[in-house]
Structure formats: structure tokens, C-alpha cells
Length: 126
Image 1: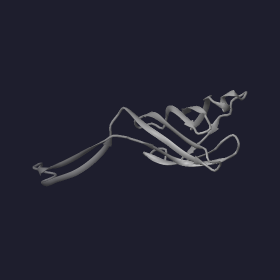
Image 2: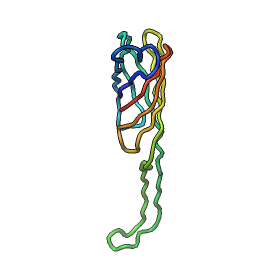
Image 3: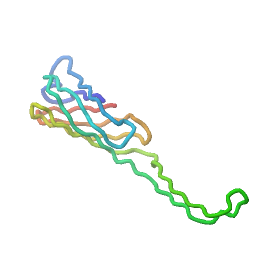
């Protein structure tokens, strides 16, 4: 995950610094987020996304020769589409970074925006 400064003090630097964040559990719906600001302040937080799921329950009687008897099963699967998510991190120098993103269902890529309490705005890409 990369944060590119688009407005604020960091965007005025030439070239603007790119913040590389490490996200854990990238195939799940949430995980830890770790990165360092350009001043080397360590930041830790969380990312999360809302991935809608469909629950299916099957109950009935199976009268086929091979499967004579009852049939009972449950399944859960992701719904295709765009999932919304958020990031939130607190840095050791007191800076708070928060943002929102959109990602495709079943993918580990997306984009969004974030801002911090130091007046910076970021383009978020992963």
C-alpha cells in the first residue's frame, strides 16, 4: 500500500515522499497496518473493508440411489462488486492518519484517499 502526498506540506517537497505501508492479512477483511512517516515516526493501525457475503442453507431429502437420506449443508461466499474500506493509524509523534478506499471483491488492489493531522492529503493505492 502506498500513500502519495497530493496536498499539504509533504506535497511541496521535491520530489514528494512516498509512504509505503505494510498491510497484514491482505486476503481477509481486516488487518494491521504499519508504516513510517518521512520524519521516521513509526505508525501502527488497522485497515478494514466491508465485503458482503451470501449465506446459503440447504435442507431436504435426497432420494437418489447414491445419496439416500437427508441433505444438510451450509455455504458462504463473497458477493462480486466493489467493497469499501477504511484505514486508521496513530503515529508515535502524535500524527493520526485516516482514509477511505474502494477495492474489487476477491482482489488485493484498490485506491482511495487519506489525510493526516499535519495537514497532508494522500492518494492511497494498493
